[in-house]
Image (cartoon, rainbow, N blue to C red; front, side, top):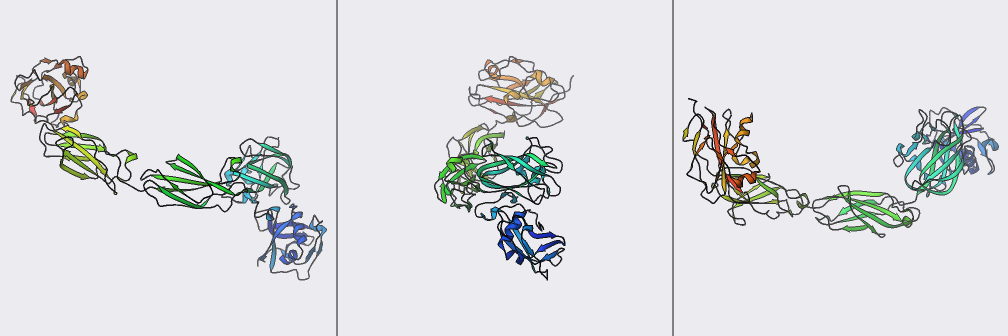
Length: 591
């Protein structure tokens, strides 16, 4: 009599079938239930030397293809094969419930050990690897439910199958099988195992005696391992293997129900429940990691508690919490169990820093346009919903204009020319507002020179606005207008963008050039002839601009429009203001 299992992808469980001279028959549940020795003999016949524990009855399918066996088995504890038992047939040979059996020592120890590789979520296909594999027999085909097997190309003591368990386990038993569809199996192999990549060996192990019916059990007397390697030595047909590993986790599983409560801007409280699996040596402590943007902030070790308060947090910041349980043996293996993970966002408060980098984007004689940057990201403390801008006549004076905006810009109008105004900004979240920034002072432009009062084919005469306040010197800046286009605001040009007459003449696009430099001691009336061919040279301005060229007031082109503005340097620190551009003025025809 031969025995086999059906209706299962796992080789150690299924519907019990016996094959006799009269064919293959499904065994009735009552037939095996009557004699527990018969159940053990069935499993021993299949290679499971430690017998069976579970026998389940299932309803006979109406479309069952095989006949049924409803007789009895009389087996003793010495019987190794079912053919050694006394088997008595029944006259009816029918039943409503069939025998579904589970073989294996792990069933006796179901509270401690279990077949690990059945759990595809915890042990995905990526857990399996190999030094080499035959075509169609990948490393992950070593899982016993694969319907195939892993096969090495040759057996030369170097090719191996490796299983990474992901964490430390106490391993009690190994079961190996041959290929599930062909007569290929490993008869001996070497077993290596490791916790920390320092591989140890369990020597040569016994393999299988046939391909796919019999299992080879190996009792390991409890080894501690993170990964296992199987190195085939001898084989039949080809070195092909399927494996199952029975064990239990050494360290606790992850804590459950990790929750964050009482969240404020600076603190939060976390709580959790103990893991269901506390590891081999029991639960003793917890490790709490705090991360921000994937960077580790702190690590805390607690006793056997289930709550913890985290302080010194930053407002409106997302944190990640990782909680792991440790057993009494954690000091020995240097690890905690798997981590539970959650995240939380601290609450908002008012900004603790002011807006930054207040600058002007344009000026005129009657307006100033400002932009600014938000507070430093570490001091925003929430979502900035608005800014309040203040303009005053003195550095810390009262605001005579305020403006609330969600944008970072402000155009202030109705101002006086040639006047310094002070601007400061504060930012607000939905909780409140922060402090004002330091005041920044800015001059409005002076009024422009009027249209030229006289012109020739190469000159234009302007009546300049001589500053009434103290100044060091001023530039007269000219620009040839092209196609009637208005120039950019005079204050938008930095000093290093103002070129010489020669550079402007060489450029294909008009550039503003310095036609003259006038010092405070060199003012002689307010009339200025643009294009009169004179040179001006001021050591102060030349030193500041680091140039060795004189400023040449070169001749203008006939029938061409020009505008001028003045840039007035008011002190040795280089502070300045400008006038607006004059209206366009055109030279006459060449005579």
